[in-house]
Image: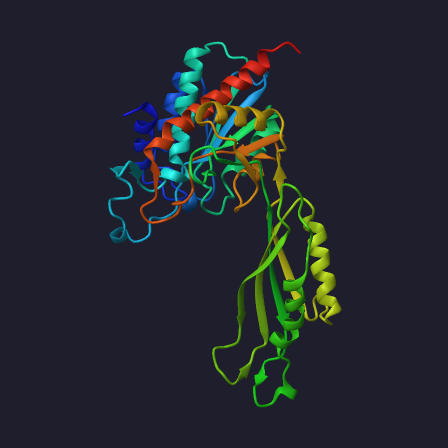
Length: 390
C-alpha cells in the first residue's frame, strides 16, 4: 500500500458528487500545508449549490510557477445495484482499484500531492513555485469553480507559467497520450417562428419545421474549416429538436433547435455566429421576424505547442514508462479552457479514461505509481531548467 494509493482511497471514500467536496480539499490542503503551502478556500455559488475551491501555493509568486489543477467532484453513481461494490468504498479486484472517481480524477489528485511531497523532501529549496487549483464544480455547470479562481488570480496579478490538469487522458497505459489543447465549444438555441393551425388547412398556417428544414440541411453539410495539425475540422451537430403540441393534427407555431459547435483554432465564435446568421437569411429567414437565435460560448479553444512544458512532460513520461507520448486535442472540454486564459502553457495528463463516468469505474493499480512519478519527474525537469544559467 503506497502513499499514493492510500490517499486515492481516502479521496474515493469522500462521496463528493458535484458540487459537493465532502472533505476532499481539506484532506489535500492539510497535507500541502505541512509542506509549507499557503492554502486558501474560495467558496462561490448560491446557498443550494455551494462550490468549494482550493488555491494553494508554495512560494511567494516571484519565481516560475507550475500549477497542478483538477476537480474533487464526481458524477453521480447511477443505480447502486448495478455496481459490483459500493462506489464510495474503494475496492480491489483483478489488479484494479474500483470506485467513483478513481479515473476521473482522484487518482491524479493523490498522485499530484504525493509527487509534491517527494519533490519537496528532495528539494527543500526549489527554484520554482508549485501551486494547486482544485474545484468541486467541474462535473456540473462549471460557473463557480475554476473560472472564479482564475478571475481572482488574474485580478491579483499572480504569476502562472505552466499548468498540468489531471484529467484522464491516457488510452492503454498511463502516459501514452496527453492533451495539449482542447476544441472550443459554443451552443446555439434557434427558435423558428411559424403560425399554428389545423393540419388540414395549411394555407391558414405556417409550418416552422418546413421553414427550418432547408437551412438545417445546409448547416449539416457545411464545411466550417479544415482544422490544422493539432485540431480536427470544426463540427456542427444538432442535439435536440422540439416542435409541436403532441397532437397529430396541429401545425406547430414554433420549432426550437439546439445545436453545438466544437471548433478549432481555425474558427472564431464571432465568425461562426456570423456565418450561421447569413445562412439562415439566405433561406428567407429574417432575424426577429422569423427566428430568434441565442448563443452560449462554453469555452474558446486553447493550444500549448511543443515547448517548455510539453517537452518536460514528454521527457518525464519517457524516463518513467519508456513510451513516446501522443499529443492530442480530442475529446470534450475541461477546466483547461479557463486556466489557459491566465496561464500560457496548459496540458492535461492522467490515467487511462476507458471507464470514466461508467458503472464500476476503475484504474489499474499498476498505473498509479507511474503517474505519481511522472508528475514528480516533471517537477524535477522544470526545477532544473529554472536553475540553469540564462
